[in-house]
Length: 293
Image: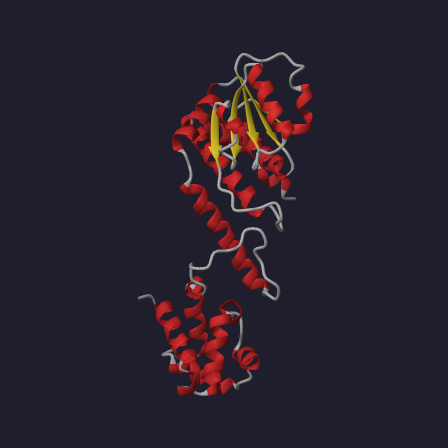
């Protein structure tokens, strides 16, 4: 059993057996369990004020738990502070924060939100689809990446990455689609669509038209049951824990970026030595010291 689990167990016992312990011990133990992030930044005086006890009470409490003093207790809490929150309670994806939470609690909420999203997205990865998508992009003469709203930010990020390894690409907002069909189609043209819910009629129409023009289409979406998924060449399904009413697109955008980062990693590995040389040449082609004056 880890030190922190033993410490948490002792603190919980003090709280649960309130009548068997002093009121000061109960107040200090309860506060530490509820506010571990704050406590690791507190002085003895800070904690005594928050718990309405005395400095000597905090020091005695620390020694009762087997520590030389309060600083040593703080170190024990800080070593694995996540144990104080456990992993049983899941973060709500739409409105993750609660009224009255401290800045430390809010930071922990977003940490857990990101971890949950990555874990769920990773569990649903289809490696065959990722490999097929990488093959299509590698063999293409040109790749056009489409996104709308928050997905456009993800599209631009993916575009900048693949350009680093010499893939000829462009990134367009869905609103700019009409000009795509007016240009002459290249020999091997790939379109990558990023549409989280895939509920926009314009997006569906664009995919249909591109397929009619002979394009290969890779679709990144959480709506893998949509009929449109049957006509595209590759579907990269992503985790969706959000609804339309939400504080922000935290989870959906992260899930899209995570899947596309994996795809980029697969693309990079296919010509690893060449790509290492390429990014070294591009990023190392100037003397950084001249910009530090």
